[in-house]
Image (cartoon, rainbow, N blue to C red):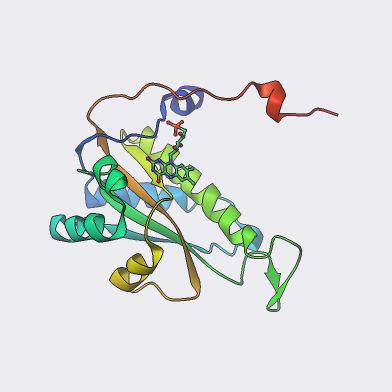
Length: 175
Ligand SMILES: Cc1cc2nc3c(=O)[nH]c(=O)nc-3n(C[C@H](O)[C@H](O)[C@H](O)COP(=O)(O)O)c2cc1C
């Protein structure tokens, strides 16, 4: 798929017909690893929940009801970043964003992930409304990792409409 077309066709999908195989998922996650990161620290981490039994428990306990429905039928990826590395030197914050740089790098990683998924014929939904404490406990995620998104991944049942974007002149300034 042409890159422009890929960007145009990606949507947040809230209605899944099928999930994803281990092989396809692994390939997409390897592509996401190509995202740039602060001093190549590569602090993004992914916890993939694929088995039916675990998905059911995970959805029920880790997601509010509306996101349980939005992600039904899809596999779920928890993305985190290791704190205190991106944006840090010798254990000290280099400038004002601090761990914001880890979140920035994870956002880049996840952007690569959702586009690589679309290119491979899969759809995604980034989920910010999730219960991090329950997820940490359930998946044994260490305290030095910040839990950010849960990403649903699978094949859409039907294509949602494109969401509108702001007028470019409202969000850009050229000097
Ligand atoms: C950080 C982040 C958190 C989000 N959280 C949720 C969520 O909890 N539930 C949901 O249905 N959509 C969620 N979304 C999807 C957005 O609503 C969606 O990206 C936006 O409306 C634009 O639509 P599009 O992705 O189809 O272009 C989230 C997106 C991002 C980037």
